[in-house]
Amino acid sequence: MRVAGRLAADVLDMIGEFVVPGVATDELNRICHEFITGKQDAVPAPLNYRGFPKSICTSVNHVVCHGIPGERKLKSGDAVNIDITVIKDGFHGDTSRMFFVGKPPIQAERLSDVAFESMWLGIEQIAAGKHLGDIGEAIQKNVEKNRFSVVREYCGHGIGRVFHEDPQVLHYGRAGTGLELKAGMTMTVEPMVNAGKRHVRLLPDGWTVVTKDHKLSAQWEHTVLVTDTGYEVLTLGANDR
Ligand code: MF3
Ligand code: CO
Ligand code: CO
Image (cartoon, rainbow, N blue to C red; front, side, top):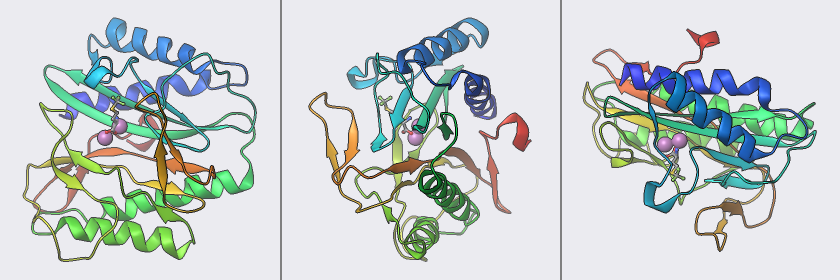
C-alpha cells in the first residue's frame, strides 16, 4: 500500500506542469496513462472500472467528481481536480488534488483551501480506537464554519486489494459514532466541498457529477493507514515528504 500510494502521488507531481491554458483534459489523461503504464509498470485503476472509459478523472469547476477526460480545453481561471488511482502488485493507491489553470479566481482558491484544510482536519482525527464519525464531524464543522457545504452522496472508502471497499468514510457526522478504527486499516479521506448548496446531479453519461446550482466544487484526497498512535498518509507528494 505504501508503494501504490507513492506511485499515485508521483503521477500528480508529474502532471502539474501540463495543466496550462489550451490543454485538453484528454491530453492530461494520455500523459498520465503513459506514465503509469510505461514508467511505473502499474495499472490505472479507473480504466474500464465499472465501464469508466479513461485512466484518470478530471473534474473541472462545477464538476464535483468523476469527470471524464475529453476534448474540452482548459482555459485560464479554470479549477480542475485530477484524481489518480494506480494498482501496483495488486494494491491500490488513490489520491487527488486541485490544480488551477493560470491565475486562480479568489473564490475558487478559497474553496480549494477550505477543502484541503478540511481533509487534513479529518485525517488528523485518525488513530486506533477513534471512530469514523470523528473524521466526518471534523470535516463537516470546518466546511460549514466557512459557509460552504459537504457533498453527501459520495464518500471516502476502505481501499486495499479492492478499489472501493467497506467502510464508507462519510465527510459529515458526529464524533464518537460509527466504526471503531483499528491499526492496519487503510482508507481514503476525500471531501467534496461545494461553494453553494450540497446537492448534486449525475449527468446522462452516467459518471459526471455536477453541482445542482452549478456553483464551484473542490476536492482533495489522500489514502491513509491507521496506526496505533495515529495515522500514516500513504499518498504524500514529493514536496510533502
Ligand atoms: N478515484 C475515485 C475515488 O476517489 C474513484 C473514481 S471511479 C472512476 O474513489 F471510475 F470514476 F474512475
Ligand atoms: Co477514493
Ligand atoms: Co480518487
